[in-house]
Image (tube, rainbow, N blue to C red; front, side, top):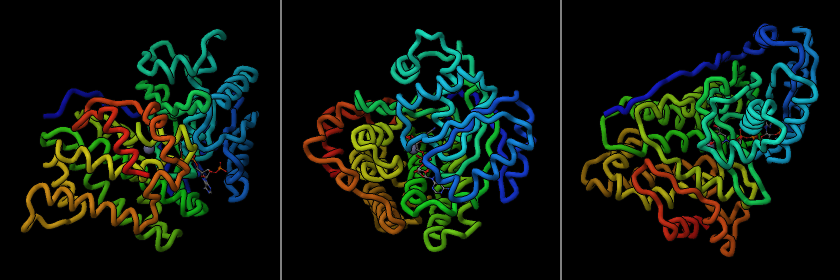
Length: 393
Ligand code: NZQ
Ligand code: ZN
C-alpha cells in the first residue's frame, strides 16, 4: 500500500539542444548580483563558460566568480563560498557543472544567512535531521554539465569533511532549496571523460535501486522505476558505443533527473544503504561518487537479497528480462543481480574499492564512517558492514 506523501517539485527544467537560449530570460527574474559557481575548468575548455557569461551579460548581471569547486565538495570550500555570498550580498547562485557544483551552491545558499556564530557544517551536515523551517535561502539556478546525481531537481546537498572522515548528505525537504531552474542540454555532456559518464550512469541506476528495493506491496512508484531502469540500460549501451549519440545522452540525462527528484520514492520507505557505504568509501578515498557505489553495490545486494527475495526476482524479470522458467525464486533473484553485474562490467564500472584506493587496513575505519539506515529490507549490523566492505575489496 502506498504510504502517505506530499509531492512538490518546484524546479523548472529547460531541456534540449536550445536550452541555453532561455538562460538570460531566467536570470532576469532575480536581483543584480550573481555568484557564478563552477569547478576545475572543464567549462572553459568546452565553451560552456563563454555561453553562460554571454547570458549573464545579456541579463545585465554583476558576476562574482566562485571557481574551483572540487568533486566531492569540502566543508572548507563551503565556508569560502559562504564568505563570498555574504561579502557580495548575492541575489542568485548559478551553479555550472555537475552534482558537486550544484550541491555546493545549495550549501552556500542555505548557510549564507545563518547567524555568524552558527557553523553550517554542524547545523546541516551533522545534525542532519535538523528541521529547515528557519532557512533563509538564496535562490540557486543551474546549468548541468555532468549527469548522474539528480541534484538539478532535488533538495539534497552532500558535503565532505576530510578531517573527521565523514561525507554527509542533507536532504533539506524544503521547496526553497530546490534549484529554481535547471538548464539541461545533453550535448554539454559529450565532453565528459568515459569514466565520469559511466560513474554517472551507475549513480542513476543505484538511485533507482535504492528506492526500488524496499517494501513488498504493489506500488506504482516501482513500475516507474522499472521503466527508468530499462531506458537507462538501453541508453547506456548506446552512449558507451558512441558518446555523441544524442538520443542516448538525452535519455540518460532525463533518467538521471527522474531517478532522484523524489518521484519514485513517493509512498515508499527507503534506506539508501549503498549510498551510506559508498559515501564512507568516498570519505576515505575521495573517489568518484558513482564508482564508490558500483564497487560496494553487489556484495551489499547479495547480502540483503534473502530478506527481499520476491522483489529481487521481480527485478530480474522486469528489468533484465531473465526468464523465470526452471528457476526457483532465489535462483531468479540471483540471476537478476548477475545480469546487473554483467552490464556493469560491460559499460566499465569500477568493481572493487581497492581500485579506488581502499586497502584492507582501512576497512574498520570505513565501517566507522558508514551510517546505518532503516527502511530497506535489512539494516546492517557492524559485522555485516565489515563483511560487505571486505567482499568489495
Ligand atoms: O570540475 P570540472 O573541471 O568541471 O570537472 C568535473 C569533475 O572533475 C567533470 N565534468 C563535469 N562536467 C563536465 C566535466 N568534464 C568534462 N566535460 C563536462 N561536461 O566531471 C567531474 C565530476 O563532476 P562532479 O560534479 O563531481 O560529479 P557528479 O555530478 O557525479 O557529482 C558528485 C557529487 O554529488 C554528490 C556526490 O556525493 C558527490 O559529492 N551527490 C549528490 C546528490 C544529490 N544532490 O542529490 C546525490 C548523489 O547520490 C550524490 O551523493
Ligand atoms: Zn548517488
